Image 1 (cartoon, helix red, strand yellow):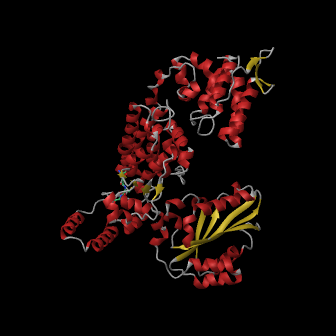
Image 2: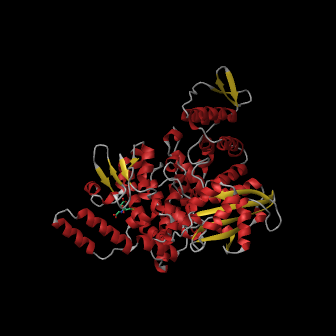
Image 3: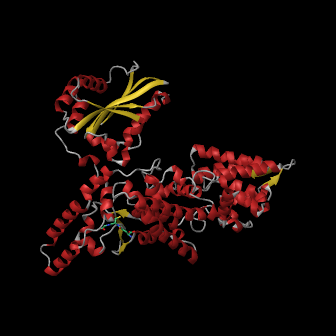
Length: 433
Length: 173
Ligand SMILES: N[C@@H](CCC(=O)N[C@@H](CS)C(=O)NCC(=O)O)C(=O)O
């Protein structure tokens, strides 16, 4: 079976997890490009709404709607043991779609910058979700799972509908009263069948606040204007040789008032491919990759002058970041893990950033600091919600690229020499590139 | 329900042929004859099953492997204690432990669940509805296990339905 979807689509998760339980062989359609593949004629012939997830069976049957797809690939256990249990499963699928879904979107989407923040709908969404969680709690206080005494599709679907809430906006204090829901959520999350599908989940520590900048960037990229225009142009091109009747219909459709951000556009933004947060900033003349190549291959005597020669202060900036809590640093290897862990979490930032982070001192007496370079004039961590885990543990200072002091500092950090402010000797360095 | 019965049920659960192998020593300690040797004592026998099961089925992490053993001792020493205080302390502790967990170890059934479940039976049948409410999480876990036919086997189902209304009031955001 072939499942059409973009990556990390929570609706596709339902079917993918269910398939892990049933052993149904579900492959993700290769080369699927959201917004393109699902608008082609051949796709629309199979799936007239052009929405994903969408399933094509081995014998050429077509199924849309994520719940139906998940049900189809399930096994008997997941569907429920009796007629009544089957109906209960259905009850929870509707609950997820109707009670959780809309409120979750209203709460999560502004946080991700997809839609404008509105205090009233924010508050209402939080209350609605609390009511839904209470409803779940009522069941889960006395029962391990939602239906019967086994994992069913109900658990899988409700779980996936909570994922983005628990990852981005529902902080520990908000989740705390729902201890039974938390217990259950953890159990589903940690089933091997779930883990095979849901790879990058982390619990929300702090509600991601609405960031007008993020929203503006999203609008610029995908909002009304840009996206709509692109869509039209494409459709025009595709449609030209067609009969006038079809053409006219299409036109009428397009004439409808620009709808609010639809799910397609939201998902587009979630697509990793089109989502280098640095894309919104001007490229300038400094080529990060070239510099990294020189830095890796040449001696610092060459690479550092090269850096200053090529550096483009208009469009790039240099920063000094110092770890705020050196008193917590005990073992050197643990401090190194702190740095490499941060680098890993900032993985997507590598494309347009470079850093040398150094550890000075020894066990129980050390500091961490580094020199960073990235595209743009602001702290780059604001560009992506994925980048906000570590940076608040550091004090950040923007350096003046033309000053002698900066030159010295850059030289020191890029060549791993010298001491920290307290005279501690250089111990180890890590390069983010 | 008697240690011999508990051991028989655990053996059944892991498909270990137990028939005719159990007896008691002169000091009234349970023993199991296995290949001309006697395995003596509840914990030793259960640990024998644990290792067998581990080899053939589960493959837990090392931590969970030892945690499971700890639960065997916990069942033997506290739940089966002759002191009523110990028993109730054990229930309280389990109840707290199970607030954040669906199973005793990891995120699936293990022999730890089974051993503690059977050992608890005598206490659970005697709990009043009010007491069951006090052990809310323990009751949820126990009810879940007794609803698995391979675990319950010939046992009797204990009624927990009186507390099923309580859930509506437990979370106030
Ligand atoms: N109710 C559907 C919703 C599917 C849906 O809205 N999919 C969106 C992506 S999340 C889509 O494919 N939109 C494409 C479009 O509207 O053109 C389901 O659960 O499968």
